[in-house]
Length: 224
Image (cartoon, rainbow, N blue to C red):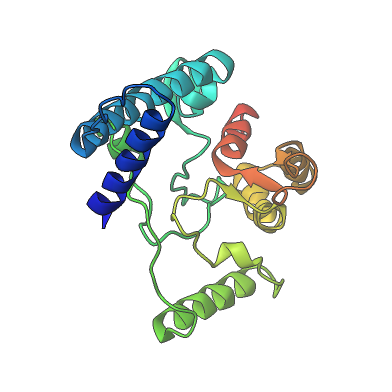
């Protein structure tokens, strides 16, 4: 069908040229393979090499800190990232959300420069093990805090298992424990939480949040 259509177009071109009194031009043959290979090579170079290098270069020029991983330094040493949660279990620190990966041991992470394991439990809401685990955590936290309602992010995991942030409600729920363990007033701890609460992006995107690592570093900076 394609060959027939091509022949008809060529015949029409030859007849038109003859009627106009001009010699007919020889038909131009195009190689499909040649065009496909050239297109593949050009797009591979542009989209696989040039575009990533340009974007990476612009990111390092205008957003160098974010392009390097939003790293957090202390005394010149990288101790973490704003984008990755770390495990804190001491009563002296705020705890992150539960994680299916149980995070990565901080010292092992720093020593081996490996990325902490990421992922969820993949358990459905109807899964008995998930329901039992969440209800058990709620009962335990509520009993230890005078029956106060437990913020939902204290007992649920994020999809990545590495959410670096908690809700302000979660942080305020933990404030009495942290204040007692450090010998601080609860008002001082609550003020610290308020100072480290980030609002919605552009005023309407997302929810207010508290970065756990930054908040714990600020706690250590208080000298208690």
